[in-house]
Length: 360
Ligand code: SR1
Image 1 (tube, rainbow, N blue to C red):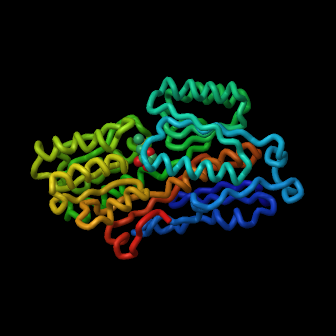
Image 2 (tube, rainbow, N blue to C red):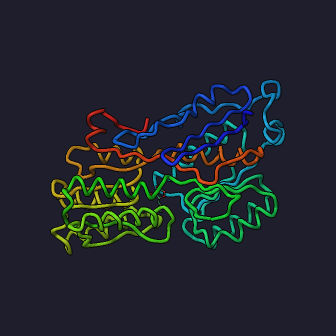
Image 3 (tube, protein in one colour):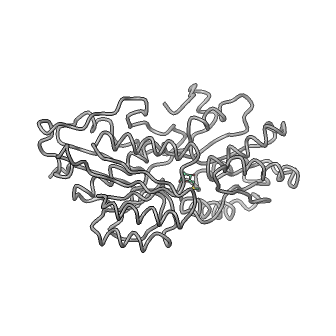
């Protein structure tokens, strides 16, 4: 039996396929990523943001399409309720979600709480009142949003999360396999440094992906006891990179022997790298990070850049997967509870050797 919407994942890779009627081109655009997470660029199985959006199918061309998607006069409505929206990772995620929604004929209603948990809950309440077909919750604290998610489920609204540990069996959780991300980033730093050195750790608690990455860093410190975390900084705000840059400038003075930086979010890495560059210390530091976007690539390949490696998926593909998962739930199809997108290590050396300039 062939599902119309097929959203799949594996421990080492998000394999997200969607099969919708006769839309073979769309199926071809969504083939699974390869499963080897070593020094490869993120796979690009998705349609690029610059491509024109596909038109919703006409009824004549859509025999076999699930009923909620088969009425051009009543498009399914999905609320994308976000905790955060600033920064190139989140912008790229939104572009992916919007592109996938256009291709599936979904009306996507987007809100952002800009870090305010009360506003996040209020935005969820609004989505319930709007009687949307599904809600995607993009970041946010699980304990805070869980009661409202239960309310949505009771109202018959499907829910899927990205980077929220909701712990409800009927709510699929998408993530970038953050325990693995943390392990790969910290291990790259450990191996490159011969397992020794003073490390500035840039991370904060209270965000599910960052908490998971932190668990892996604790393991790596246990494994390589000569790696010394001498400072921990970081702040998630509307200006995360700028705030981190200010904090890092102080660390350069307070910890002049530190040479290694582990930044568990690309906005943290941008701030650290800018502080290092402005201090004229690029040849002294080695920065390891998480995430990749056009901005990040440009900073990594710049001559003399201290940004040596990052571990990432493509947030454009994650945004697309979020909408596909919501679509599958609306269509009444089975979606796995945990959808893990495959991260890979991307080194500065790899980007330069392959003349990689951007995400395309
Ligand atoms: C504030 S949380 C930032 C992280 O969320 C996503 O998981 C991205 O990878 C980013 O690093």
